[in-house]
Structures are given as C-alpha cells and as structure tokens.
Amino acid sequence: MAEQKRDYYEVLGVSRGASEDEIKKAYRKLAKANHPDLHPGDAEAEARFKEVNEAYEVLSDADKKARYDQYGHAGVDPNFGAGAGFDGGFDFGDLGDIFGSFFGGGFGGRRANPNAPQRGESLRISLTIDFEEAAFGCKKSVTVERMEQCDKCKGSGCAAGTTPEVCQTCHGTGTIQVRRQTPMGVFATSAPCSACGGRGRIIHQPCPDCRGAGAVRKRRTIEVSVPAGIDNGQTISLRGQGSCGRNGGPNGDLLVTIMVRPHEIFRREGTSVLCEAPITFIQATLGAELEIPTIDGKVKYHIPEGTQSGSTFRLKGKGIPSINGRGRGDQYVTVYIETPRNLTKEQKEALKAFAATMGENNYEQRSRFFKKFKK
Image 1 (cartoon, rainbow, N blue to C red):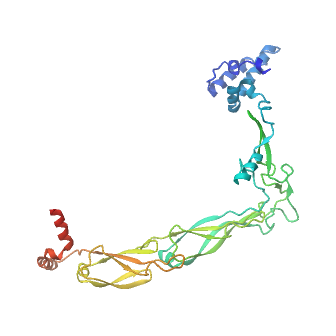
Image 2: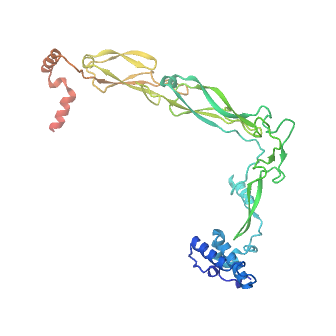
C-alpha cells in the first residue's frame, strides 16, 4: 500500500530541494548499482532497482513531482481525485458550452466544424501614388497572388469521379477527445484528429492539379479605383478580391493601403494644402502680383505692400477635395523674403544710400523689439 512505501527522495538519497540534474545523477548511480544483470538471482537488488525506477519516474516528471510534494504518494496514485466530487469524466468542452450560453464565448473553446463554409483569407498590399493622384483620384492596376478554387475539381480536392471519405476516427468532426489524469480527476479536452489532420475527411485520390487542396495559387491583375481626397496610410477594401473560401464560403477581401509620395512643393494637413513661396525685398516692400502654384495649376495673387516675411495668405477652394465629396479645402501660402546675394559694388552703394534715408518709423517690428528690450 502507498503508506508502506518509502519516501521517494529518501530512495534516491537526495533532498527535497534537489535539482533536476542532481535527481538524474542519483538515479543513474543507484540504477547501475542495483541492476538485475549485475545481481542475477538477487531478489533484494531487483526490488531496490524497481523502487529506484519508481521514484525517478515521479521525481523526473514536473507534474507528478508537484503532486507528490503536495499530497505524498496519494498525489501520484492513478485513482487520486476520484470520489472527491469528480467522476473522472468531466469534459472542459461541456463547461465551454455552459459559459458560451451566458457570455457568448467558451472555456477553452470548441473547434468549428471543419466542413462548414469558411471565409477565404484577406490579402493586404500597399500602393504608392503621386500627391495629385491622391487629391483628385485615379485608377491603378495592381498584381496580387491569391488562392482560387481549382477549376478541375471545383474545390472538392478529389480526382474526377471520386469523393472524399468521412474520417472514421473522428466521424467527420475533425477533433478527438483526449483524456488526462490530473490531481482533480480525469479531464477530457479536444484536439485535432491526427488521422485526417483536423479536416474531418480523407481524400484517397487527390486532384492532380491542386493535390487535394481544392485551391490553386494564381496571379491576377486587379484595377483599383482610388477615390479623390484619400490620404497617406488610408486603406481601400475591395470586397471579394482576396483568396477563395472553403466549403462554399465567401472570398476574402483585398486591402490596399495607400502610400502618397511627398511633393516637392506642397504639404497636406487634412484637406488643406500648404506651401511656401519666396519673394523679393522689392515685392514685399511695394506689393506685387505673384504666380502661385496650386494642385490645379498656377494662379495669380496680389500681395499688399509692406508684406512681412512669414505672412500667410489663403487661396479659397484650392485645397484637397473631401473624400466624401463635400467641397474642397483651401491652400495656404506662406511667403518669405529672399535676401539677394552676389551684389555688385554699385548695388551695395545704392542700398547704403537707400538705408540712409530710412528711419525707425519704417521698421515697426524692429522698433517694438528694441522698446521691449529697453524696458
């Protein structure tokens, strides 16, 4: 009986805190010393050898060792847990059905019927377009590789004139029950059927084109309509353009993520277009009519005299069209004064003469700055 057995740690001559390597080393030493081949006809040596093997079988197994440390010999008894409120046949799958009925989920979950219609895989690609193409929309062709239903077997995976056989191991469910002994009793869990690979059926004569898969990989060119106003990083979903489904399930989608090339002049913020334009000192001082680039082409805009560097002007309705088709944004043009270089001697003298005629009243910002500085 279990009560008459010696402590397994005592049998191997190790402490309860012994490491895995220490337990293994002690076992090898004792097993070799008491092996029946070295002691033919010695019943005591044979009994010690069996005792050493039994101790090592428990202490070398992490689960068994944990139960032994907590419950002693009773914890590794095959009948442990029976009669303690467990009938030895409790199925976690049943508990999953109970939880699922209340919360819409499962405890561990049950595998879906492998023969039920399954949606195909959705594919994701990126498409790079120009700034103007994103603003006004365009049509682009993309090439994708996707799984399509095999034309020869029509998705069955079977050679012509044959049909799949329902798996006799799992009876078409694709799963089998696996029972495990635990300290709390015997618990049953579901696992994919090894006989059919979880498919629920066995194809003895596979289709020569798809080799039993029911689908083949094909390269397709698909036209993508990019809507006006789309922004960098946004995704277009093409319904049903992904891989084919299984067992009559719908195709997946093709998800096209748009990448917009940076523009040399324009930047975008929402539906607004931003740009900077250089002007001369004379244009800023006297005012001028400028040619401003927009995504629609060049437009004329008059800046007033005395325009300061960094001033921003608004061009109404010259921004990005709204992606929902409701109007357009505006364009904002920030001007900055470009300081001339490579002046001739005469030009420098003329500027000095001009500067001599200027007073503090001609420079409002400069005047306010030095007044604050004096305070």
